Length: 332
Image (cartoon, rainbow, N blue to C red; front, side, top):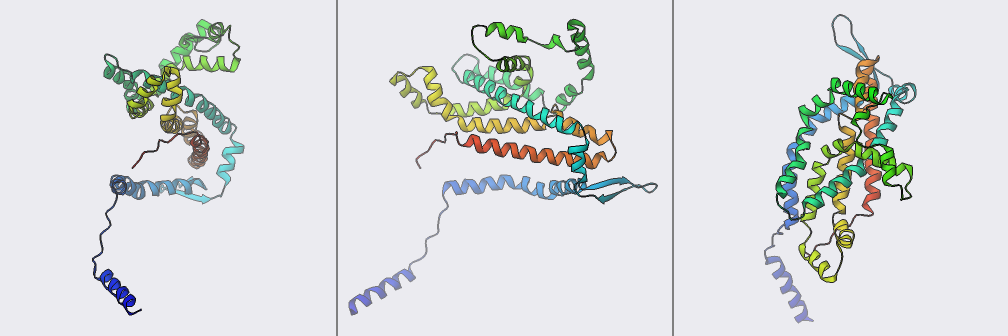
């Protein structure tokens, strides 16, 4: 018993006298800290600059706006949810514009994601002038941003001339000159295939909107290229040894491995579609500021309803798509 007590006492004394080793942070934790360091300027700017503006916009949507006579300035009168009710139930066009924007979004996401994935797979192949082709496909992204996008969006003269030419040629008032194909052309192509009219209409709309799709697919294409180049060539070599065809390799290897990129690009496309100047809802909200009384407060209410709708759509889509995303496990 005495020997056991002595041994225990010696162990305790040794444990107390031994210096404590400092815990060294893992590489992932150090990378995370470095990431927060780079995000810090944005976080500080958001809290100091954007957060007060966001709060003023929310508060403005619950008030009536009245300009003071003589001395200038304005007066806000709290009215609760009245501006939101006016936007939803009094304004005859807001809800209809929202539905139209969502329908356009449903069309945009598959068309842009599929096209950018198709181009990325082509540009990932070994061929002469691959870097030049990548630059060519990304040039529309640069040209369709900033000042050039604003000029193109406000080129009303060109739109008017196109509408007039379309009305003269077709007699329908629509811009038929800008259409590449018609529904009859696609129906002839799918004559021997039992394809519904909905698919025919979608294909026609996609082909006639190819200019807009190409302009909005550059960023997605680069993300897909990064994902494709991160796949180990050894996986494709093993597929060739096993005798897998290119079609099987794409659906069994390539598509699951880049499924996280598909989710990222779909979310990016949703946000880009909801915030672009060509979006009908954004244009309608901006016009409401100048076209009706208390337009400032009603447009603020419309903006926040639109924002909540975007968040809900993103959350629902991400929750559904995440169940089908494949994440490769890496051994540490």
